[in-house]
Image (cartoon, rainbow, N blue to C red; front, side, top):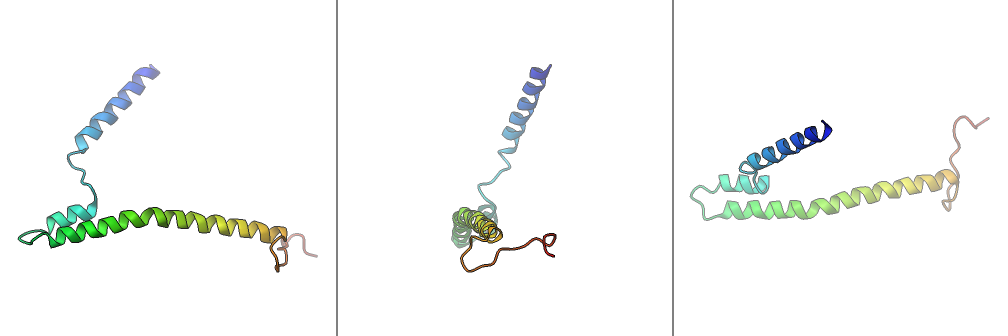
Length: 98
């Protein structure tokens, strides 16, 4: 019974994927640029490609930077709480103060 359910789910997923590929575009900016090229020499299309490439190139760097800053702050906070950060006093919890 479980294998039949798995086969059914995979079959539906494959059919849905194949049915929706005709609707999918390469990227939203390219689709927008194609809509705006009425009577123009492709300037809008080139602009669409330009901005889509900039977006696709900058996104991985933005994600890596976000996680890098997050881990840096987490590491710095742990050093500060342990009192191992040079020139900083350890943070005391409110319950331990007298």
